Image (tube, rainbow, N blue to C red):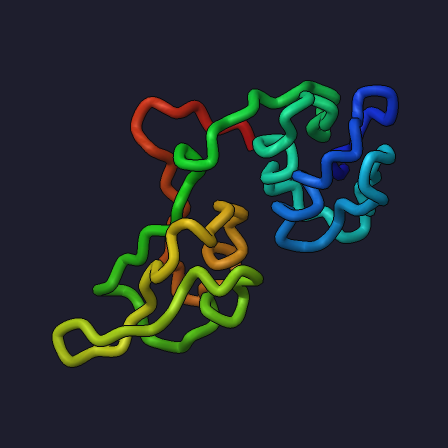
Length: 142
């Protein structure tokens, strides 16, 4: 079941649409937005970003808004990374890239500000070398 937007609470600010890695949230500026359930991957990015609390999780709860600097980030277990670049291809915001470490090509978080913590890189990694990590003290809401 996907996240959903409560139409009466949505101000049409477009924050959810800009943050959504799957482009599941859409709408006209200053008009209530909607979430396409067929595109939603339940990552919770839209709810973390919504300044009005207009988004409900699949259980019907209003997730807590979390400042962007406290969103989870991918951690690459470099000893497990095989350099296949699947995670880089999965990232819709080009936050990941490949680099050299000890003469090995491995994935790395190159643009932390671009990362929304959706977890697509973690889900796509065929060798489970990426883990989405929340900052200490932050309760995972998605």
